[in-house]
Length: 211
Image 1 (tube, rainbow, N blue to C red):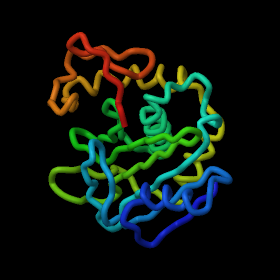
Image 2: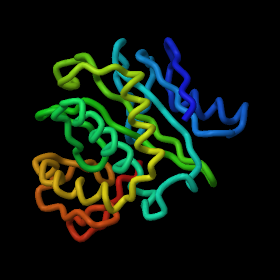
Image 3: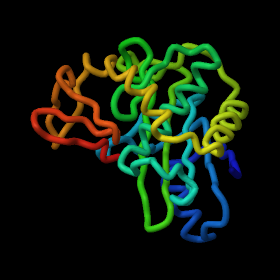
Image 4: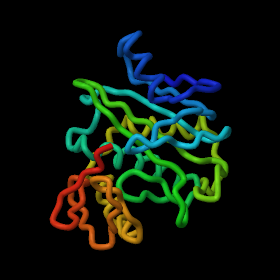
């Protein structure tokens, strides 16, 4: 994975997509910064971009992903692997379905994935420092360069989805105290059932993360 650091950018997602449009895709690429001024969150929302936090986006070929990974649940896969890396550093962060980083009862980050015919883009934001009373921040200090290197080394190993899902399934109970936005409506996850493809069964409806 080639990694390019930017001092400041409006959105790493927009930047990397524009970069690929101009230069074409050659190898897996990551763009990261500690200051993002107009980040993209889920459902078209923005993500607060305080200086000192981590924002990165990467692009890779779909064919470089594990063969058993449901693309609709790629965001679960990518966030959970980063969670594993953070846990190895001593963090107690966990993933709320489908792709939000939480520490205790507050969101500290999240991910968004998009695809083209051959490529998959993933953008991740993680609060390393406090941004507001509504959001939390990571409970440990990390070296960003080291964190990203270890993270992408793990992605290179193409860990099977079934291995990641078996761990995520155990953690899913933590999601049940929260709500998720489904079709624009906040719905409790208390009675949600997690399916093996990463979707949930809720109120007789099967729902993927869709981001």
